[in-house]
Length: 200
Image (tube, rainbow, N blue to C red):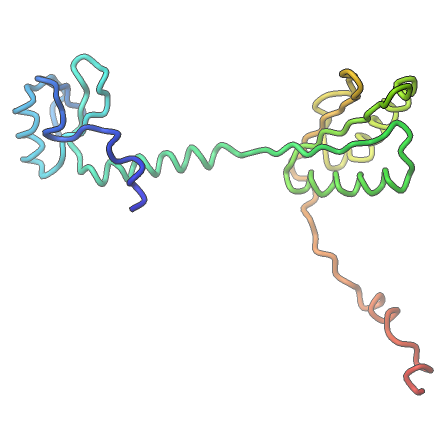
């Protein structure tokens, strides 16, 4: 049963130890009742007496069907979970003198991450004396941000932390969604076997 994880978190009916409880709810007058009277009220409503605030003085209870109460609780938790969108941060590493081929390959990956809704943290790692090229690293990261301006906004401009210079980007709302790559008829034709070879 899906609600099992929530069971046992609340005292119900005879499990409630307090001598008196405050009842809240729609169909019952909100006030403090002796526990015996509160249990009798719950019985009259063909429902359960559920302790919802055990640390209050006196404890606060509701008269409700316990399985319905658990269902509502589960539903609320699910809604809250849905609102908490998990954002992944993908890292992309460059060297201070990254060539164009490698740069374009990493740029393509970054576009994919951003289209999936992930943040991108790009950094240039300086080994040993390559720290002398830190201006080059900054130019590279700014170029990277500029090339991604249709897909991302800059959260943090290039910053040097130890041997790393980092820039952070977030996906832009309404960035172009991923489109499946489909061959156009013209491209299919170009991949066809040449006519003279078919005759052989």
